[in-house]
Each structure stands twice: as structure tokens, then as C-alpha cells.
Image (cartoon, rainbow, N blue to C red; front, side, top):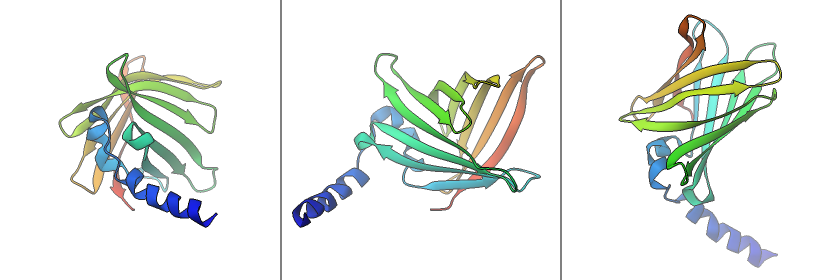
Length: 163
């Protein structure tokens, strides 16, 4: 038992130092950290914690929105390189039964998530997102929903690195 525990400890640093696949490198600043922001005009908080999967072949984002007096809204996104489509794609699943799939494009200091569909039993929505890096310790998340009259901002929040 002691030998296997020692072997496991020897493997951990290799995982922590994994080099991400080239297409995920624009997201590397997020990995290994949690980022938290407050929604404007509310006490609600938005927190994302990122970690590499499979030696940098995928990136996990565990997302939690906390609001006073309400259960947490929790979701998990996995970002990965799809060699067939030759692009970074994601799968998002959340605790209220909703899912979303889409793609990410890196444009300078911004991660762009083009329009995609969110679906749950109760709701369907087309949305798009932009994460703009603000140095090493923050990024701005801007989410918009498409309605009958065009695109409307759902939220715009600055998330700061907390760990």
C-alpha cells in the first residue's frame, strides 16, 4: 500500500505540469485557478474553477452561481480539441437539467464562444459569450441572448482570480 501511494505522489507533479494541446493554450491562464465575480446590482456571485484533464487534452470548468436564499446553480464544462472538426469545442451540463454544446475561438486576448443553443426541459435559448483577458488576474465575461429584436446583454461581469 505504501509503495502505491508513493508512486501516486510521483505522478501528481507530471499532471500539474502537463502541456496543453496547442489549440487550448489560449485558455491556459485559467487552468489551476478559481475566478469569482459579482453580478452588477446583485449579491449573486459567479465562480469558475478550471483544471486540466488528460495531460492537457481537455480543460474542465466547474461553474457555480450563488444567490442569497436560492439553491446554487452548478454546471460543468469540458473544453477539448476536436480533430475531426479542427476546432475547440465544449460540452456544458448543469444541475437544472440544461445542456449546451458549442465551440471556442481565440482572438487576441479574447476567447469567443459563437452563437450556440442552450436547452432544458423548460427553456430554449440562443446565446453567445466573450471572455476578455484583463492581465493575469482577471477577465470579463459578457453573455448575450438572441431575442426577437436581436442580441441583448444577459450579464457582463469581471471575474478575478481567487486561488
